[in-house]
Image (cartoon, rainbow, N blue to C red; front, side, top):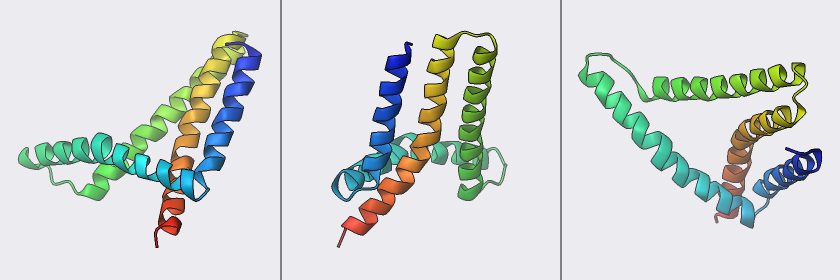
Length: 124
C-alpha cells in the first residue's frame, strides 16, 4: 500500500467516524450496526449459549458478550502485533496495511457507540 493510499483511507475512516456522530447519517449507521449485531453476533451467540447449556455448562448472556468482546480485543491485539512486527522488518507497505486494519478494528466500536447514540437522539 502506498503512502498516499494509506493517508486517503485514514481520512475516509476519520470521516466515517465523524459522520457516525451526526443526526441522519449517524442514525442510519447505528441502524445498520444494530442489524449487523443482530444477525452476526446475537444469533450465533445464542446458538453457542444454547449448545453450552445443553452440554451442561451453565452460561449466561453476559458471559457470552464478555467472551465475544475478549475475542474482539484479541483481534485488535494481533493486528497491533502484526503492525509492529512489519515496522521492525521495514516492510512499510505491509505495515501500512496492517496499521489500517488496526485503525479499522479500533474505529468500529467507536462508530457503533457514536451512531447508536445519534440514533437514540434522533428518534422522537
